[in-house]
Image (cartoon, rainbow, N blue to C red; front, side, top):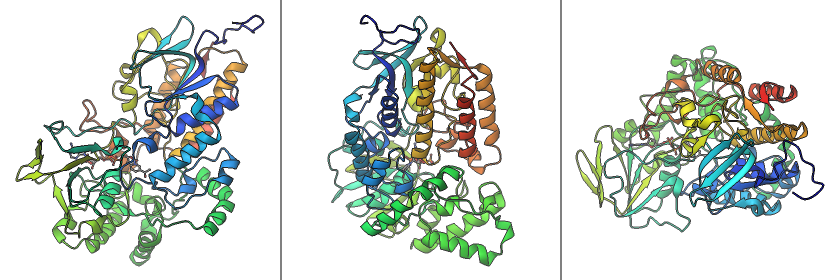
Length: 545
Ligand code: N01
C-alpha cells in the first residue's frame, strides 16, 4: 500500500476487491450499484456474455413476465422510473433484457462486470478472513466479502431419459436458448415439459411450427394472463400510480400487486363464487385468480377441490377434443398448489391440426434416439427437440460450485440435501458470505425480494466497515432458529404437500426425490421486519470479529 494509507484489520488492500459478486442478473447488478454508492471496491463475475441472468439465458419463444411489468421492475432509482416506459402489461423477454441493459448503460455497470467468467470454487481463507475464488480457466480472485447472486432457477436440468445426448437434430433447453434466431416453419418439433416455461413456449411455437408434439407428464393449472399493450397515455397514468403500486406490493404477503380475498369460500354461495371466479378468469390480469382467491383455497382441501373443479370445466370448454381436454386437467395436485403458469391461447393450441399432446404417463418415452423419440407405442421422427424441463432449483447453483467455509467444510455437506440458513442470507461456518435469493428467503415477486435482500446485505457490509469488523458469521443457534421457523411457516399450506421445484423435488437430479422446505413461505412483510430488527440491533446476532 502507499504511504499514509490507513491500516486496520478490515483493510482489504492485499485483496483484489473488497467485495466480489457472483452473477450479473438482477441481484448482481443491483449489488454493484449499491456497493459503488456505498464506496466499496467491488466487481461482478458473470458466466454469460451479457448482464441479465434469468432474462439473459431464457430467450425461448414466448418468455415474458407473468407479473405486471411495473410491479416487476426495480424501484431504487426515481430517474429510471421516470425514463423507462413499459410497452406491455406483461413485458416479453427482449423488452426485459433491454430494460436491464438500459440500467447497465445508465449507471456504467459493465465496467465492473467481468463476463465469460464461470466460477468453480470459492474457499474461505481463515488466515486473513477472505474468500479465494477460482474460475474454470484457473484464474483466481480474492475478496473480503462474497455475495452470491446466482439465482434460484438458474441451473437447468435435462430429463433423465435414456439417449438424451443421442439426438442429432437441433436440440435446445429453454434456459440455454441460443442468441441466434430459431425458426420452426416446416419443422417437426418435439417439446418435453409443461411447467410455466413449457406453456409459454408451446403456445408461441404452435403458431409457426410445421408440427409440434408436446410430451406431457404432469398437466398444470394454467390460467389466462390477459396481457395487453400499454399506450403512452396509459403509461403516464401508471407512472403517476407508481407510489401506490409499490406500496401495495410492499404490504402484500409475497410482494405481489394482488391482495388476497378476505372471505373464505365457505362464506359465499355457489352462485357468488362462480361469478367471482368467472370475473377473475375472464378479466383478472396475471396472478389475480391465484393470489386474490378465497383465502381457504390454498389451505383447505375441500375448498381447493371446488375451485379446481370449476377451472377444469373451463379447460373442457376450451379444448375441442374431449380426450385431450381430460389429459390437460391435473389430477395429482390442486389449483395454486404449484406455481400457476400463465397462458394466452395455450389450450386453444391443442385445437390446431399441427399440435398434438402425448401423455407420457400412458405411453412413456423409452428413449431419445438420433432421429427423434421412441415411446412405448410409437417412434416419432423429429427435426427439433426442446427441453422445457426446468431447473435444479434453489440449491442447484450452489451445488454446482465447490464452496468451502471454515476448516474446509463444504456447503453441500453442511446442507446435506436440505438447506440450513440464517434469514436465507447467511450460513454458520461460512463467514463473510452473503446470499441474495439464497434458500429460505422470501421469493414471491422476485425483483421486490431482490431489492430488499441486496439493500440489506450491502447496508450490513457498510456497517461492518464502519465498525472495523472483518469477520461475520451466522451462529449455529441463529441458523437452527431460522431453519425451524421456515419449516413451521410452511405448515398447513397445500403447496408444501406437492412435488415441485418449490418443495425441492426434481426427479432428474440424484438426491432430490424427497420433499424439503427450501423457501420461506411466511409473509414478506414479516421477513423484512425480522431482518430489519437484526440490522437495528447492530447485527449482534452474528459472530463479529
Ligand atoms: O420448470 P418446471 P419451468 N420426463 O420444473 C417436466 C419460473 N418461471 O422451467 O411436473 C418428462 O416447472 C416436468 O414434469 P413433472 C416459475 O417460477 C417464471 O417450467 O415433473 N417430463 C414439468 O412439466 C416456474 O415455476 C416465468 O411431471 C419431465 C417440466 O418438465 C419456474 O420458473 C416463466 C421430465 C418442468 O417444469 C420453473 O418453470 C417461466 C422427464 N424426465 C418460468 N423432467 C416468469 O414469467 C421434467 N419434466 C417470470
